[in-house]
Length: 522
Image 1 (cartoon, rainbow, N blue to C red):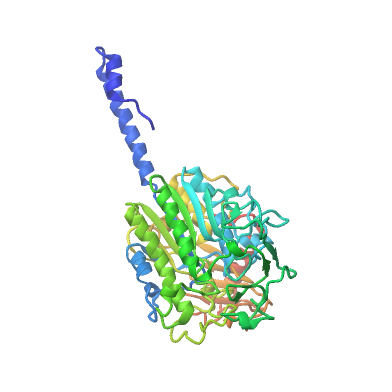
Image 2: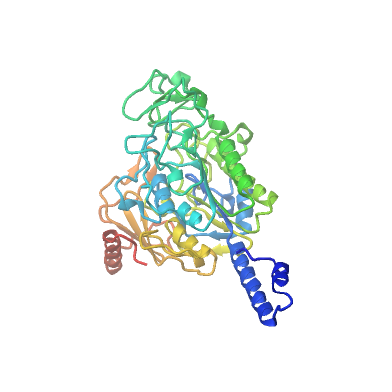
């Protein structure tokens, strides 16, 4: 609020400047100061989103085979949640739900996206980035995207790539378009591929071979990392990927530099925006496959590339926190550290993750992992750090990433219309540590849907396969469903559906009702 100088008003009204006018002026200044305080209360927000990081993969969550000191410090100075959930057990639907406040299972096109998928979120959707822009924040996304790019016909990798994040409320984007194991293996900054030589155009296909690049299935002799299942198409940097790619040689990323590349872009964004409120979605690639940590992290753990990638993740978090401290922003920046789904050990490459796992338990005390309806599929690390607004400690409140839009809207004093965040609920009191309960009911997505109600969990019946032999993960599918009480059975070892048929009926009814509605009942 701009207020005219008091001295100029005195000169203008002198010599008849009344006591009444002076009192009115004091009130005006007081009101302006109050508005200023409210604006100052709104923190910068950074979401650090790890990939495939399990509940048990951090030392602050009980891991003993490795140390994550920077993340541990974040937890020690913040609020660590023990029942925080990604919306789904795989990456694309989790990201969709977090950014839109809508369960991804309500749509048919939100499975694990191909590298050439069109933008999955319709540009007219109100997103988390839109919310922050509405509150006059500058918004940025850096890192793994995996929500598609371009129109329905496919992105023009050699021209302007849109729609994308800039059409969803982000002011700046530096992206890994899909995942490291999928082509195209290039970065996209805003609307264009970074460093593309127009004389070497990119071709991408997930249906048929393009160009003359060697593929892993035919030339294993060229590989520095071999696939364990799938992942045997075009070879980039000695690693065969999912899909076919040719061209764009100068623009291709170097896998071992990826964490440095995206962290540098995140730090540059913070540096540019340090004088005004900002929202940064920093989406790590680690610890997704292919796991190729920078040489300075190799051997930091006894678990090979997967463990070393966790060490690299810890470093990335430390870089962000150091930059916030350097700019004097650490006190009033809310940092949320979490993951897009649970862990997977062998997800397509022979990187010794299984052989060198030792006594480490990536899922912690939970059953399952990535892809699974069991608890480890979606229960992930969740740390809220905001020294000016959140006391440190632990919380057992049930919280979900689908609620971030509605929750941050409350924190920022922003109103949402009926179409915004249709499944999200305002859980800000829980996220600030002032509500120990959180969600009363929560739908979780794997191949089958689950319903959490307090400590009860119902996994609805499914005839899909029960076990993934490639990943060695129990998927939680059962033709009769499962009922568990997590209060004394975190490992989901005792199926109680025969003992409590009334609870089964009630929870399935609730799940059916939510599925049939356009939004999750508040």
